[in-house]
Image (cartoon, rainbow, N blue to C red):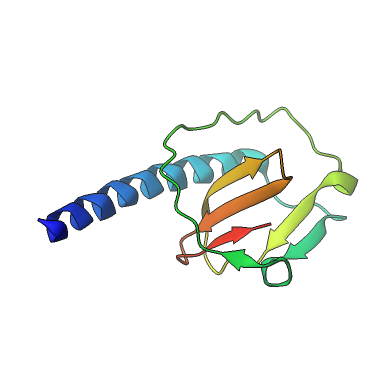
Length: 106
């Protein structure tokens, strides 16, 4: 019974990740390429943590919003595509989950 529950959990998680990856790919196509003047931050310097997320609500992306180059920050550190992000406005942290099986807190 334990093995069956674990497999059911893995299957559900895989479905959620696939849906998030499809949404992220659509979002990336809307955002276009990077611009000069972006700031960078390295996940290794800022720390990496493992987290679990069962959140299934999808966010809407507004393609009309422009971020000035002096306000943009590119976060580098994942070795694969990022399929989910969660912002914590209270502590000013961003969590990202990647296809490289890691989550990072920025």
